[in-house]
Length: 215
Image (cartoon, rainbow, N blue to C red; front, side):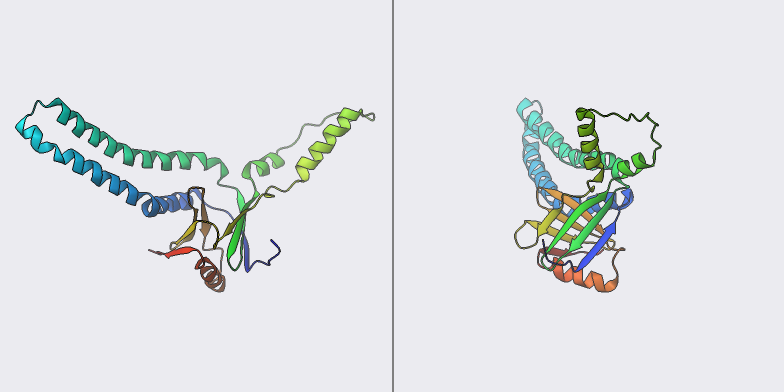
Protein backbone atom coordinates (compact mmCIF):
# COMPACT_ATOMS: atom_id res chain seq x y z
CA UNK A 1 0.00 0.00 0.00
CA UNK A 2 1.80 3.16 -1.26
CA UNK A 3 -0.84 5.58 0.03
CA UNK A 4 0.34 7.76 2.91
CA UNK A 5 -1.70 7.16 6.08
CA UNK A 6 -3.86 10.01 7.40
CA UNK A 7 -3.24 8.85 10.97
CA UNK A 8 -0.60 6.45 12.25
CA UNK A 9 -0.25 5.35 15.89
CA UNK A 10 1.33 2.72 18.12
CA UNK A 11 -0.73 1.48 21.04
CA UNK A 12 -1.42 -1.27 23.57
CA UNK A 13 -4.69 -2.55 25.07
CA UNK A 14 -5.33 -3.23 28.74
CA UNK A 15 -7.04 -6.46 29.75
CA UNK A 16 -9.89 -4.47 31.28
CA UNK A 17 -10.51 -2.49 28.09
CA UNK A 18 -10.46 -5.63 25.95
CA UNK A 19 -12.92 -7.33 28.32
CA UNK A 20 -15.32 -4.36 28.21
CA UNK A 21 -15.00 -4.16 24.42
CA UNK A 22 -15.79 -7.82 23.98
CA UNK A 23 -18.88 -7.47 26.19
CA UNK A 24 -20.03 -4.58 23.98
CA UNK A 25 -19.26 -6.66 20.91
CA UNK A 26 -21.39 -9.54 22.19
CA UNK A 27 -24.24 -7.19 23.17
CA UNK A 28 -24.31 -5.72 19.68
CA UNK A 29 -23.62 -8.73 17.46
CA UNK A 30 -24.32 -11.86 19.56
CA UNK A 31 -27.14 -11.01 21.97
CA UNK A 32 -29.75 -10.26 19.27
CA UNK A 33 -29.40 -13.79 17.86
CA UNK A 34 -29.38 -15.24 21.39
CA UNK A 35 -32.58 -13.39 22.27
CA UNK A 36 -34.25 -14.55 19.08
CA UNK A 37 -33.36 -18.19 19.75
CA UNK A 38 -34.39 -17.84 23.41
CA UNK A 39 -37.81 -16.56 22.35
CA UNK A 40 -38.19 -19.41 19.84
CA UNK A 41 -37.33 -22.14 22.36
CA UNK A 42 -39.48 -20.47 25.03
CA UNK A 43 -42.49 -20.38 22.73
CA UNK A 44 -42.00 -24.04 21.80
CA UNK A 45 -41.69 -25.05 25.46
CA UNK A 46 -44.63 -22.93 26.62
CA UNK A 47 -46.84 -24.30 23.87
CA UNK A 48 -46.63 -27.75 25.51
CA UNK A 49 -47.49 -26.54 29.03
CA UNK A 50 -51.29 -26.79 28.47
CA UNK A 51 -50.87 -30.42 27.41
CA UNK A 52 -49.01 -31.12 30.65
CA UNK A 53 -51.91 -29.72 32.68
CA UNK A 54 -54.25 -32.06 30.87
CA UNK A 55 -51.89 -35.03 31.08
CA UNK A 56 -49.09 -34.50 33.66
CA UNK A 57 -47.62 -37.89 32.86
CA UNK A 58 -47.09 -37.15 29.15
CA UNK A 59 -43.42 -38.03 28.78
CA UNK A 60 -43.13 -36.53 25.29
CA UNK A 61 -44.29 -33.10 26.50
CA UNK A 62 -42.02 -33.27 29.53
CA UNK A 63 -39.04 -34.16 27.33
CA UNK A 64 -39.73 -31.30 24.89
CA UNK A 65 -40.04 -28.74 27.71
CA UNK A 66 -36.81 -29.96 29.37
CA UNK A 67 -34.94 -29.87 26.05
CA UNK A 68 -36.12 -26.29 25.40
CA UNK A 69 -34.97 -25.22 28.87
CA UNK A 70 -31.53 -26.80 28.41
CA UNK A 71 -31.10 -25.35 24.92
CA UNK A 72 -32.00 -21.86 26.15
CA UNK A 73 -29.59 -22.13 29.07
CA UNK A 74 -26.91 -23.50 26.77
CA UNK A 75 -27.13 -20.50 24.45
CA UNK A 76 -26.27 -18.04 27.22
CA UNK A 77 -23.80 -20.34 28.94
CA UNK A 78 -21.88 -20.76 25.68
CA UNK A 79 -21.75 -16.98 25.23
CA UNK A 80 -20.35 -16.56 28.75
CA UNK A 81 -17.82 -19.38 28.26
CA UNK A 82 -16.56 -17.86 25.01
CA UNK A 83 -15.90 -14.57 26.81
CA UNK A 84 -14.19 -16.32 29.73
CA UNK A 85 -11.97 -18.47 27.49
CA UNK A 86 -11.03 -15.46 25.37
CA UNK A 87 -10.03 -13.43 28.42
CA UNK A 88 -7.92 -16.31 29.71
CA UNK A 89 -6.21 -16.69 26.35
CA UNK A 90 -5.18 -13.03 26.03
CA UNK A 91 -3.72 -12.65 29.52
CA UNK A 92 -0.31 -13.55 28.12
CA UNK A 93 -0.44 -11.01 25.27
CA UNK A 94 -1.82 -7.94 27.06
CA UNK A 95 1.65 -6.36 26.91
CA UNK A 96 1.83 -6.57 23.11
CA UNK A 97 2.34 -3.35 21.16
CA UNK A 98 0.30 -2.73 18.01
CA UNK A 99 0.48 -0.29 15.15
CA UNK A 100 -2.45 1.10 13.17
CA UNK A 101 -2.52 3.13 9.96
CA UNK A 102 -5.74 4.90 8.98
CA UNK A 103 -6.21 5.74 5.30
CA UNK A 104 -9.02 7.50 3.49
CA UNK A 105 -10.98 4.31 2.80
CA UNK A 106 -8.99 1.58 4.51
CA UNK A 107 -6.82 0.75 7.51
CA UNK A 108 -4.06 -1.65 8.51
CA UNK A 109 -3.22 -3.20 11.88
CA UNK A 110 -0.27 -5.34 12.92
CA UNK A 111 1.57 -6.45 16.04
CA UNK A 112 4.68 -4.34 16.40
CA UNK A 113 6.12 -5.92 19.54
CA UNK A 114 5.25 -9.15 21.31
CA UNK A 115 5.36 -9.05 25.10
CA UNK A 116 6.95 -12.50 25.27
CA UNK A 117 9.76 -11.48 22.92
CA UNK A 118 10.48 -8.38 25.00
CA UNK A 119 10.77 -10.41 28.18
CA UNK A 120 12.93 -12.96 26.40
CA UNK A 121 15.23 -10.23 25.12
CA UNK A 122 15.68 -8.88 28.65
CA UNK A 123 16.77 -12.27 30.03
CA UNK A 124 20.58 -12.70 30.26
CA UNK A 125 21.96 -15.30 27.91
CA UNK A 126 24.38 -17.99 29.08
CA UNK A 127 27.89 -17.46 27.84
CA UNK A 128 29.05 -20.10 25.40
CA UNK A 129 32.62 -20.83 24.28
CA UNK A 130 33.42 -19.41 20.89
CA UNK A 131 35.26 -21.61 18.44
CA UNK A 132 37.53 -20.14 15.81
CA UNK A 133 36.67 -22.89 13.37
CA UNK A 134 33.17 -23.25 11.95
CA UNK A 135 31.93 -25.95 9.67
CA UNK A 136 29.40 -25.40 6.92
CA UNK A 137 26.37 -26.50 8.99
CA UNK A 138 27.29 -24.11 11.84
CA UNK A 139 27.50 -21.18 9.44
CA UNK A 140 24.07 -22.06 8.06
CA UNK A 141 22.60 -22.21 11.56
CA UNK A 142 24.09 -18.80 12.41
CA UNK A 143 22.68 -17.35 9.19
CA UNK A 144 19.12 -18.48 9.90
CA UNK A 145 19.36 -17.42 13.54
CA UNK A 146 20.45 -13.94 12.52
CA UNK A 147 17.73 -13.70 9.87
CA UNK A 148 15.05 -14.69 12.37
CA UNK A 149 16.26 -12.13 14.94
CA UNK A 150 16.42 -9.30 12.46
CA UNK A 151 12.92 -9.92 11.13
CA UNK A 152 10.42 -7.37 12.52
CA UNK A 153 7.64 -8.71 14.73
CA UNK A 154 4.80 -7.27 12.68
CA UNK A 155 5.76 -7.99 9.09
CA UNK A 156 2.29 -9.36 8.28
CA UNK A 157 -0.35 -6.64 8.30
CA UNK A 158 -4.10 -7.04 8.34
CA UNK A 159 -5.36 -4.63 5.68
CA UNK A 160 -9.05 -3.73 5.89
CA UNK A 161 -10.69 -2.14 2.86
CA UNK A 162 -13.88 -0.39 3.95
CA UNK A 163 -15.40 -0.71 0.50
CA UNK A 164 -14.55 -4.36 -0.22
CA UNK A 165 -14.37 -6.13 3.14
CA UNK A 166 -17.40 -7.04 5.23
CA UNK A 167 -16.43 -4.86 8.18
CA UNK A 168 -18.56 -3.25 10.89
CA UNK A 169 -17.16 -0.54 13.17
CA UNK A 170 -18.77 0.27 16.50
CA UNK A 171 -17.80 3.48 18.29
CA UNK A 172 -17.98 3.47 22.08
CA UNK A 173 -17.00 6.16 24.56
CA UNK A 174 -13.42 4.91 25.09
CA UNK A 175 -12.67 2.79 22.01
CA UNK A 176 -13.60 1.65 18.53
CA UNK A 177 -14.55 -1.95 17.83
CA UNK A 178 -13.52 -3.10 14.35
CA UNK A 179 -15.29 -6.32 13.41
CA UNK A 180 -14.28 -8.21 10.28
CA UNK A 181 -17.43 -10.30 10.08
CA UNK A 182 -16.81 -13.99 10.87
CA UNK A 183 -13.06 -13.38 10.73
CA UNK A 184 -11.49 -11.07 13.31
CA UNK A 185 -12.22 -8.63 16.12
CA UNK A 186 -10.06 -5.57 16.92
CA UNK A 187 -10.14 -2.93 19.66
CA UNK A 188 -8.73 0.53 19.00
CA UNK A 189 -8.38 2.86 22.04
CA UNK A 190 -9.56 6.42 21.51
CA UNK A 191 -7.24 8.01 24.08
CA UNK A 192 -4.25 7.68 21.73
CA UNK A 193 -5.80 10.18 19.29
CA UNK A 194 -6.31 13.93 19.62
CA UNK A 195 -9.61 15.56 18.63
CA UNK A 196 -8.52 16.38 15.07
CA UNK A 197 -7.37 12.80 14.52
CA UNK A 198 -10.69 11.49 15.85
CA UNK A 199 -12.54 13.59 13.26
CA UNK A 200 -10.33 12.20 10.49
CA UNK A 201 -10.88 8.65 11.72
CA UNK A 202 -14.64 9.13 11.95
CA UNK A 203 -14.80 10.37 8.36
CA UNK A 204 -12.72 7.42 7.21
CA UNK A 205 -14.79 4.90 9.19
CA UNK A 206 -18.02 6.26 7.70
CA UNK A 207 -17.01 4.55 4.47
CA UNK A 208 -17.58 1.24 6.30
CA UNK A 209 -20.66 0.12 8.25
CA UNK A 210 -20.01 2.65 11.01
CA UNK A 211 -22.23 2.58 14.09
CA UNK A 212 -22.02 5.50 16.54
CA UNK A 213 -22.98 4.22 19.95
CA UNK A 214 -20.95 6.07 22.55
CA UNK A 215 -22.87 5.29 25.74
